[in-house]
Image (cartoon, rainbow, N blue to C red; front, side):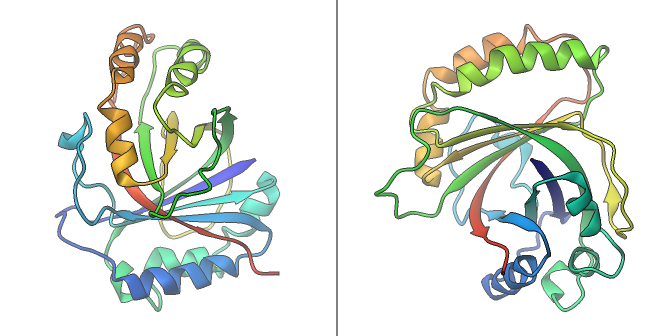
Length: 235
């Protein structure tokens, strides 16, 4: 599975996208051919406790679009498509003038104990993490991370989804800026409160103990809790 990430950021940290424009963006995303699923991320309405609040409130808006293969993804990245329009804010004034980046990555899913909570009524919350890099030895870094960190993530209370994304080569004609972060992660919870409870648990101590064992790398990392809305591709 291939994931395209698009991130819309306000360097001043003051902009917000109106719910009506999120709905309009969802309609546009749903029209993208051969997309299997779209996820729209927006900032939390109220901040929650988590260990990395100093990373800031995160992007104004972000997308994760899933495709079954790279060729379907690249077809959506042409200059005349929906994504090119979103990158320039065409038709959506809330996205105009934002700093927009994009990256295509390989999706690596990992098991969780409960994939979905049947009684969940709150808006799901995703914890988006990225490591810009570089690592001194990227292969060694990924080997350590993939062999150790997901098994610890799985012990977070009520985690519903764990995915790790690694780099691939791709081509596109989007007007937004390409980035090549060495890795992204996503943990999904039923609600912001569930995310806060999980990240306040003792599991975070095990995560930090493993973090200090990572092979050498630079660039740090960023962590952003985001409300999450799913969009299926229109037939």
